[in-house]
View 1 (cartoon, rainbow, N blue to C red):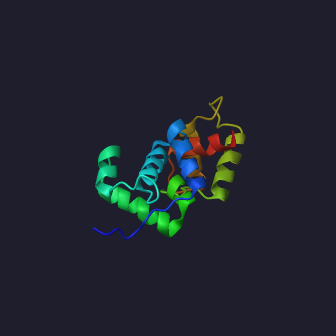
View 2: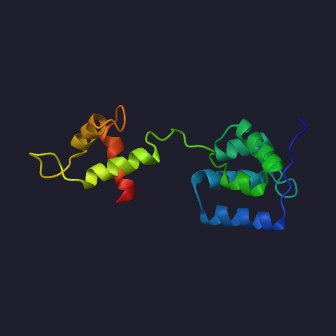
Length: 147
């Protein structure tokens, strides 16, 4: 089968891949991508996709996708992987809401309590109408960011 995306690496890229592979530097995905690119190099070992997939315990489609990404996106993005554009889950609280929660926490606790607990603070935030509903865990994360 004729390959649509041919991997041709420069000497500098080859040296960088060799360093990543030898030192196992980076994440496991980065090392695997480096190994695949190194073996897929047309001017180097030039292994088949099937042989590469067998050697590194992945699917041939993975090898094809890495080849395609190298040609379309470049060496750096292929090796390091793509970065997320947006967070997987949107923020639950806006900056204004976070500020009001922190201000509530700084204030004195209700009568009968020596300190704010997370559950008490979460109830108070809902009671004050800062948010409709909030988990004490969300409150904890908000306070931890500022601590």
